Image 1 (cartoon, helix red, strand yellow):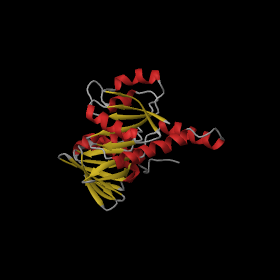
Image 2 (cartoon, helix red, strand yellow):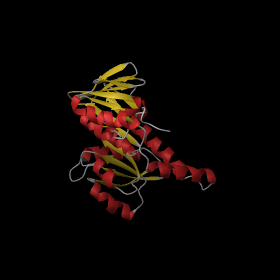
Image 3 (cartoon, rainbow, N blue to C red):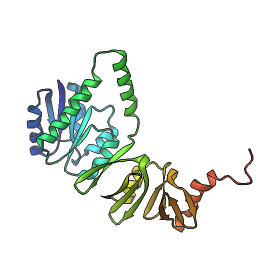
Image 4 (cartoon, rainbow, N blue to C red):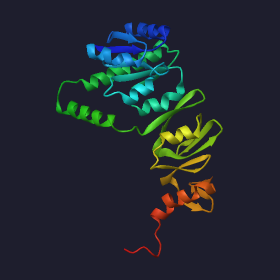
Amino acid sequence: MINCVIIDDEPLAREGIADYVREMDFLNLIATGENPLELSRLMDKQPVDLLFLDIQMPKMNGIEYLRVAQRPPMVILTTAFPSYALEGFQLNVLDYLLKPITFDRFFQSANKARNYFQLLNRPSDPAAAAVREEGASKENEKPDYFFIKCGSKYEKIFFADILYAQGTQNYVTLYTTKGKYMTLLYLKDLEEKLDSSAFIRIHKSYIVAIDKIDSVEGNELSIRTHRVPMSRNYRETVMARVVVSKLWDKHIRP
């Protein structure tokens, strides 16, 4: 049996999820709450295996809680705002449910939690121990992908596939090895999520993957068949990080 807690500041939302939980014979609802600050008290009384956590709440939102929580239980985010999906998955949540939540979608998410719970709690043997050890190490690793919303579809984007990103007003277009994707996002917000050692801003409207740059000529970069403009304000920084530090010329000695 999986002990679960629902944290949501909306009474109707809490009751709706609670009704779904009662339909699942492997879920045991032990408590509900209005904000994450109640979780420490709840978890002191009884072990919690699964947390249904809303994002937009007063005092402390769900994302803020996950940033500071020490060894949180399995977490399924519940929210009406898809813009938090990227940050949620970077914090290793198990799933992301968009309100209004249908029972079919809840059922899928609950079964995902059950499968993961069973994997973590298999009888002790070398293989299970290896799985748990690997899972523990992965908790400290950043995921290598994220999701963005493109129209009515959620697209999985691997960081390693990104060639460059172009910002236009409140939209970002991601150019990847697999295609082009447009999503409602500010370029500045994307930049904050990207690894600064792997990506570099070259223009107020462009961020590029450093290892995908093929050549630099004048105020343009070549990435595969793409020509990406580089502004004068960023040129010195780009040249220092991308070219000069890796440049082989006649002054280089074996």
